[in-house]
Structure formats: C-alpha cells, structure tokens
Image 1 (cartoon, helix red, strand yellow):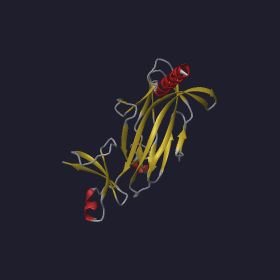
Image 2 (spheres, rainbow, N blue to C red):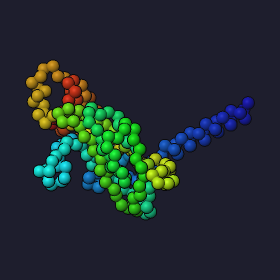
Image 3 (cartoon, one colour):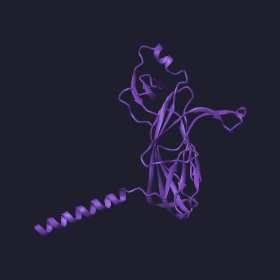
Image 4 (cartoon, helix red, strand yellow):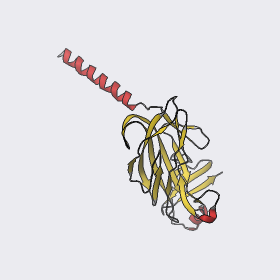
Length: 225
C-alpha cells in the first residue's frame, strides 16, 4: 500500500511538472508596438477606430472607418523561423475583422481563426496588417486574444504547432466623437463600465483618460482632471 501511494505521488508530481513545461511561453517570436517596444505576454493593448484614407496620403480616393491592430511580430532568434497566429474574437459590437498575417489576407474572419504559416528571417519583423471595421455610427467595441504559434511546415499551407508563443489581448474602441456632452443631455443614460487606456477595469474614476461604457450601448473617452 505504501509503495502504491509513493507511485501515485510520483505520478502526480511528474504530471504537474509536465503541465508547467507545457504552460511555458516560447520566446522565438515577440510582439512589438508602433515604437518597436516589446509588448509582453499577457498584455492588453487598445486601439481606437477612426476614419482614414484607404490609400495613405490620398483621402480623395476614399476613406474607411477602422481600428488597426498596430503591432509587429519579431523573430528574436538568429535563424529563420516559421510562425502562425491564432485569433479569438471575445466580443464584437458590429462590423467585421480583416486579418493579414503572415502571408495571407482573410476578410470576415470567423470567431476562432488560425492563419496559415509563414517564415520570418532572423532578427526581422513582420507587420500585423489587420483591423476591425465597425459600422459607421454604431458605437461600441471589439475585444480579441491573439497568440503566436511557433510552427513546423508539413506541406503547402500545412503545419504543426511546435510551441505556443506569447499572447496579447486586443481592445478596439469606436466612440462617439460628440464625447460626454450627449451623455449629459440624456438623464436616463448611466455608466455601467469604466476602463483605463490599457483596457483594465476601473472601480472609480482616475485622473487622466477614462473609457466609459454607457447603458445605451455606446462607449466614450473622457478626461478626468
């Protein structure tokens, strides 16, 4: 009986160790922000929807409303490595997502979406050319989790996942440019959620930019002095 208990204890310890190894994040790739600063695993990044030219610098050719995922992916090693990405939509008030990475571009991606794989050379970066397109006038937000996957190619557009890379939480906001004034004119509207610029929930107003979710479904950005 004692030997059996020892064996069971040893097995439990081995399984615990294996689970800890599997939970470790592979750092072959990392996320970078627009200023080339590393975005750590588990971070939340926030982007705001705005009307921009479809072709940069040429608004006369048309504009579009979007919140771009302004991130890059860097190969941190000294050898070419293969990457894919897994995007999960947690919430989306309206609109659709276009996801362009690493070598494909897909419109109206499903709620749970995994890209094809592609190579990034040693020390190089690849832009995450992806965005949320909300419907104009339908204010709200969209939230996603995005994880990098270290891959091994097994054929054309086929791969196996070798390791799980870092994950970021993406928070996109489409707010009414009229700001807080409209809220004050409607006495029936209440604040049902408050967040900072990194998407962290606040229990009370804090100095600086506060993002508030209202009972009428809109989201506003206000400055608390």
